[in-house]
Structure formats: C-alpha cells, structure tokens
Image 1 (cartoon, helix red, strand yellow):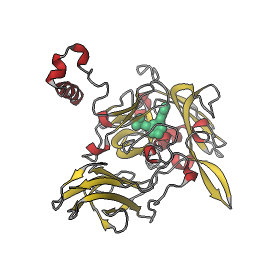
Image 2 (cartoon, helix red, strand yellow):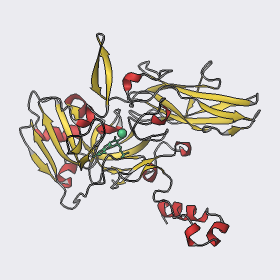
Image 3 (cartoon, rainbow, N blue to C red):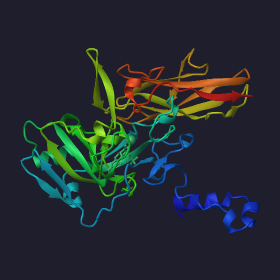
Length: 381
Ligand SMILES: Nc1nc2c(c(=O)[nH]1)N[C@H]1C(S)=C(S)[C@@H](COP(=O)(O)O)O[C@H]1N2
Ligand SMILES: [Mo]
C-alpha cells in the first residue's frame, strides 16, 4: 500500500463509529487530497499543512500545488518542446532529445509569492495561503543553459519566455486579454544559471500532473511563479516580455529616485516560519518545548533567531539540516517557559548578505513577497 492509499484509509478509519452507524450519508467521503489543506479545488490549489513539517525533503503528495487554470491535457507520448525566437537554431525536442543534453539532480525550495497572504491586514484579494505554500523537492532534469546553448541564442536577446500548456481567461478589475497561456519571461542572465533547470522528475519519480508533467521549469531562488509547469514552448525575445503574469499579476512597486515603478516579482525574500508549536497551541509551563521550523531565501540563510517575548529579545536557533544552495534549512530552538499566560513566538531569518525580515509589512509589495515578522501566539499553562 502506498502512502496515498494509507492516508485515505486512515482518514476513513478516523470517522467515529457512531457516525458510521448513522448511515452512509453521515460518513464523509475520503478527502480528495489527503494530507493537504485545500485552498481551491478547481483550479487545483493545495497547501502543505506547515505544522507537519518533518524532513528537509517534502513528500511529493504533500508538496503545495498552485495552478491558475485547469490541468491541461498534455500528450505525454508525443511530447515535444519548441525552442524559437531569437535563436540561430530553432528546434522541437522530444523528452529523449532533451535528456541527452545533460542531466542534473538538485534539491531546490519553491515558495509561492503569495505564501502567508492570510496574514495581510486588511485582508487582500487572492488565495488566502497560510504558511505552507512552500516546499523542497529534489528535481531532476536538464539545465536550461544547455537547451539555450544548443538553440544558439542570438546576440541582443534579453528574455527567455517559458510558456505552459495551460490557458484561460482571468476575470476581475484587471482582466487578461481573453484567453492567454500561463507564461513568464526570465532574463537571460538568470536563465543560464545552474539553478535554472527543466525538470522531468521530482523526488526521483516522474512529475505528477499537478506539478507540471511531463516537463516544467524550476528556477531556484525565485518565487514559484517563474517555475512554469507543463512547459511546451520557449521563446527567446529581444525585448523584456512584459506579459500578464509579470505586470498585472506578480509585480511589486519599486522606488527609484522618488518614483514608484512596477517590477516583476523575482528573488525570494528571507523568511523563517515556525512549524510547531502552532497558533493557539497550549504549551506546558516549566517543561522543555522544542520550537521547530524552516528558513529560506533566494540566497544563503546564515542565521535564524527566535524571540519568546514578541520580538523584544532574540536568541539563535540551531540548524538541524546543512546549508544547500537555494534550499531551506530546518531549525529548532529549546524553550522552557516559566510563567503562565499568552506568549508571542517570533522567528527571524538573516542571509549571508545581511538581508533580514522587516518588522512590518511594506505595502509597495502589494500582495506578494510576504516576509514581515508574524508572531505565533501560544498559551503557556
Ligand atoms: N503552467 C503553469 N505554471 C505555473 C503555474 C501555473 O498556474 N501554470 N503556477 C506558478 C506558481 S504561481 C507557482 S507558486 C508554482 C507552483 O508550483 P507547484 O504547483 O508545483 O508547487 O508553479 C508556477 N508555474
Ligand atoms: Mo505562486
């Protein structure tokens, strides 16, 4: 029995006997996505229950899913990737041909730019992600640089537009121009970095449909929106792409010379999140409690500090996993509370470059890149 089946059975077994006796209708159906918090069923948007964080590597069945459109139907048997635009050597590549360009395997953390949105005040539009639109998987695929190299990018090219097979129309105040695909332009300089890969496998197995089978981009260090799933086209362009998904959506204001200019969301901001204890949990007085969590950024995280007094004083947490490029590190902090009452726990990450988390929310970031300090209130009893 695999884990998925076991979880399904376990959740049925957890239904109280009385409810089962009351007849078929009283028995809730096994959840469609066991082990996940469902933010939306269609399109599919699932969150990792962050309090269940245990390992460096997130199991695929618990890896968050962020999809803007219905799962596209991709003909995996006859799959081809088109590479076109500002290249000397436009081509269509089968998965075998792609694999022959070179294979790499590396763990990379992905975080949705909207992760933590539930903590914005006032409440904002968009999916109300808690802490768990983040995960770390081991990705296997071909370096994007190798694909661009065989296509021979022309001088003067600036962007590599990754286009997914999924499409639809986005409604609202700033609607899409009718039906559009999901796409994202990546500056050439980022596209050729070693942490930019086209993956066919996740955690040692073929990609699942939810995570972009049969081929997806993974761009280490950048928020998830750049990691285009169901990748079918790469278009190299001589101008920045300025598509819907990096202007109307997934853009933030940057201040330059006293002016505000909209800029695509790119690099992951430093963030430490507490997995346990969770919001509202009761913690015993005069007994050791281990505070655990993870911390990540678009660069190396060097330090995690924890405050057990709402951010007045801080002490270093201990890392429990090694530093790996563009990956989160798990950490823990030993705490023995000595007085009863409500306590605000806060964790804070600092990168090797000295970047850390702001105490308050910067509205220039609109509803993305959410990394201000959010206390976890627990009750010591
Ligand atoms: N084709 C396509 N790619 C996509 C998306 C999408 O909706 N369609 N969502 C993006 C966003 S916003 C995120 S955070 C990541 C999520 O990847 P995951 O679902 O594998 O966790 O995929 C990105 N790639
Ligand atoms: Mo996202």
